[in-house]
Image 1 (spheres, helix red, strand yellow):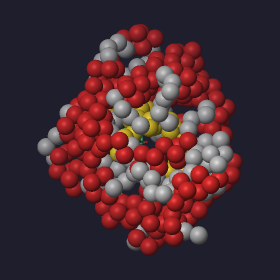
Image 2 (spheres, protein in one colour):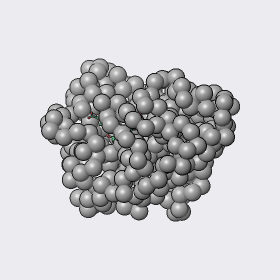
Image 3 (spheres, protein in one colour):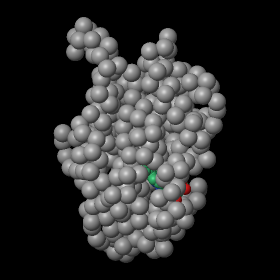
Length: 356
Ligand code: CP3
């Protein structure tokens, strides 16, 4: 794009969809788009009202409820993207895994052996149908100016949950497997990569404009072990997605030491957690990939002027990358005040013009 055209693009107010797609692809935007991981959830009174009558999984399985809950934060705050309401573990419920949320996930029959893996039969498409129906309904309701984000868990993170009844932070099963039976772990990751791919492909077909892969538990691996296990499984997913595909964002928590490995996978966007310095990372990988993040979720507890100050700092740092999407460094916590989220979105919307 010529310089003149690029300048004109920055002055015209873009649609939310254009803003989001351009930020993902590293093209000029009028301002960085903004949305929040876990923007639909328990911090919203209107979410709690539905949740009081309905279990979390039932909410995911009812397309009307999932559509309504996805729209709740957008109606209140007008973020630049709507993420479809579901969970990374929903695809596994199509495969005879007995999953409940209390409120964290619990699996009664975890996968720990070759024969457990062979047992994993069923249909991801069946499990994903309500999510895909919700996505289609969202696209119809929102029209083509607001992007809808589809998502899935990364193979490593899905394997972490699938192998434990209740996951603890040391990932005991996966860690043990990685040293005692890496071949079985490889098979497990291959199977999970198929599930991740299928879940993303279905959402893309249902109209998702952007896809996000959550590798919440990748950060516990050293770079060497990431390159041995989680990385190749992610690469498998990226290679298996039919092209042309929507832009892909990869989020990994606590993965400051893995940013080069994540950029090497060549997603469109790397989503950073709040512990890394956005400006430093932008200088390091920001010309190869766009960046998303990375306000400390707890900062939403602060008074509005402090939130605005931190957002301005992120906007400045993000300019060093080819593209920047404002977001938190992890999901909104249930205890966050609604005013904190309002202040974040307002600062993102107004801050770009006023930030020197
Ligand atoms: O971002 C959104 O608003 C879309 C919906 C969404 C949920 N979970 C809804 C949810 C998304 C994108 C997720 C992703 C997810 N789920 C991840 C990756 C992101 C991350 O947080 O690291 C993981 C690891 C899960 C698995 C999961 N689901 C856990 C660990 C928990 C319990 C933790 C908690 O917050 O209590 C859930 C439950 C869950 N997923 C809730 C919501 C709104 C709370 C359910 C309730 O209302 O009781």
